[in-house]
Image (cartoon, rainbow, N blue to C red):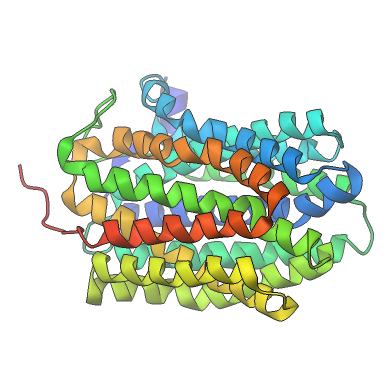
Length: 392
């Protein structure tokens, strides 16, 4: 016990400790962004060119990828036995292991196995990471800090994409996944030993929490998950299948997108401070209606690439949902509600990729028009956003 306290001292957030907490959250997010984008930048080409995956199988794989998000509710029970901070490290390590193994299983069944492993780590890390952020960062600083995290995350993307571009010159997909996974595991090991255990100011409830006053947060989270999965599962697939984008072209597009978001993400935090959540969310979903309609009807290579970039610009505005929740929430509800929120986010996400894949076989345009309708529903719901802060 003494050795554990020496290696991982426990102390409350104050002064330099607050800066170290921010440093840890940024570092973990950068690793998550980098590794996930390295996986994504190669995955569609790996799936089509090496594993021979078709649209229906891709829909199934993407649905399987979202099952752990649907089960994020179990985080509530896991944190009874392990501190959230330690769970964040372990989850990120599992994500790295799933990425590492991807190239060794180049078939439909193998991709389901490695995607599931990667996804468990990714979704549990995201759940806990969001909870830690909302617990440790004050309300007055959260919008700017979350914009900063997205900016550093985009920097992580840039490092990952540059690594993929360089590695593609020398190595097949299999070894790119191997190197990416090893980098994640090494970064997690460094972070685990570098940072002590930071205790939250408010003890979190270790049970499921559902409150009537959070209904709008639940609804916006559900709609966000539904429309996001259409983009995640099918936007890049559209570029590869219909417009014949190569993996190098996809990676360059990701790189351009990440560089833009390095500068765009901090501005979102300032927009939230100045305009508030309702305006920012409304801008996001208005833009997404046009983006999804564009995916459905464009025949231009340049236009579909531009739509992809705009989609990411609008997606970064989704941090407004979490800053909105922090303002209305009982501080003790943050951890369980983040877990519930991730499950709600993935209820539709489990079904949308399979449904979208089947619709795609009829006419791919209908898949993206479904996304436009979900964005419209989100825009209407956003008009009910009010940010009166929680009071005891």
